Amino acid sequence: MKVISIIQPWATLIALGEKKFETRSWKTKYRGELAIHASKKIDRVACKMTPIIQTLNKHGIFLFDDLPIGMILATAHLEECFEVIKDEGNSAILGYGSYIVSGNEYHFGDFSEGRYAWKLSDVKMLKKPIPAKGQLGLWDYQELI
Image 1 (cartoon, helix red, strand yellow):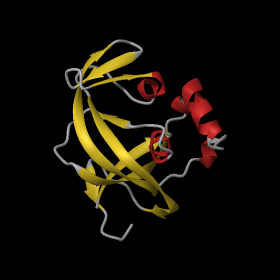
Image 2 (cartoon, rainbow, N blue to C red):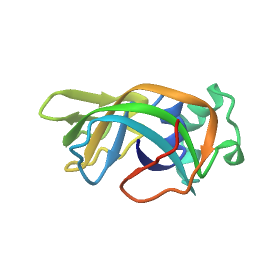
Image 3 (cartoon, rainbow, N blue to C red):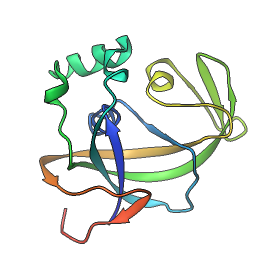
Image 4 (cartoon, rainbow, N blue to C red):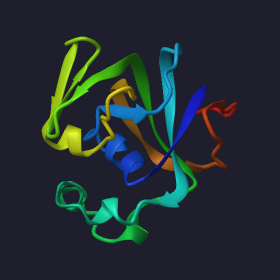
């Protein structure tokens, strides 16, 4: 299974079903099942942003230490990879009008023009996270999830 390592709190926001687009500086042609791995890094500045605090609190996560690290948290389906065409400051246009991202979704990613938004669907949080060492880019995990 292909896996993507994501810094916290972004990985948890995806696993909770609150973040539908993962933004990257690079595009991928891969489509299909994708495991979501929380890297060992926590973006502590992002964790202090109101939309993120409110969303995590809604799910019972109140402290940095409550965010799992170094673990596969969920599986998802990578549907599509869109280029960010226009960043309007509080919303973004993806893929020549395919999607307009706003609200919390906009605040949960870096939708700068020229970046890529990976559309995720069918997110399923694992009942028991799986410890795993992350890697850059898409990587393979051979064990059964």
